[in-house]
Length: 284
Image (tube, rainbow, N blue to C red; front, side, top):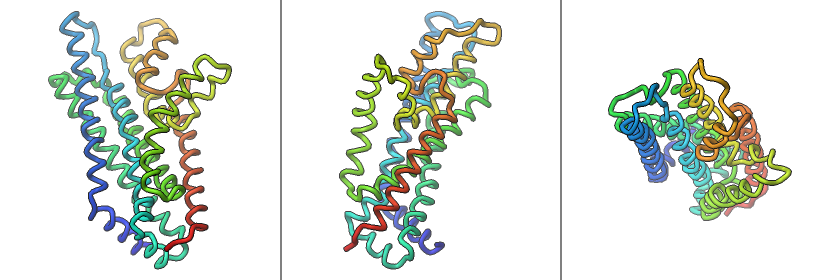
């Protein structure tokens, strides 16, 4: 396994794929952080706010929810790309069993996904500092910020692992790129809108994309509202949560850990499917 892991890391870091997908993760993180704190500064210039508004918590959630797709694409292409280039043949022929290759790729994906998540959080923090002009009150409590940042890294790792399973399942580099993008930004959006006024709207939080987004947003939104409302304020109406969830992802009353468990189940299903397909697929 050690030699197989070394080979997987060497194959990854001697190609352009990992850093090419890291660039948009960094750009999205910086842009979201900068826009979030800049907007609070704009509001503060119009009317002096009586307490800090930690919009950076929501900004990092938004940046994570847009960036995780790049982790999924990386994971999918690490194995689907090998099927396209026929390099998977050597890996399968020199390892026994084939599942060892998949395990090595999952370990690689978890490591790279953690790097992607950390870069996203750090760039969002840097962008937030630039937009806030060093007014760190817009970041909220340091414990809240670290908690949201940790869920960002966790979400990125899980999306990257799901991508490996999906890439092993379809074994086609084109489909590995197109299908996740179309599903997350088109299909699930349409399905979610259709569910809003239906009798089965309760299944919304359990859709793959919603569950993945909820890992971060279902923590960030309540922390943001608690910080803005303050301990002396009456109960915040449900509509305030729902409006923020519309823009920043997640669902009212659905805990972040419930979203994590739901998405973890999807990840396990795709990995199992990829393992099954890899064992049965002929190689050439």
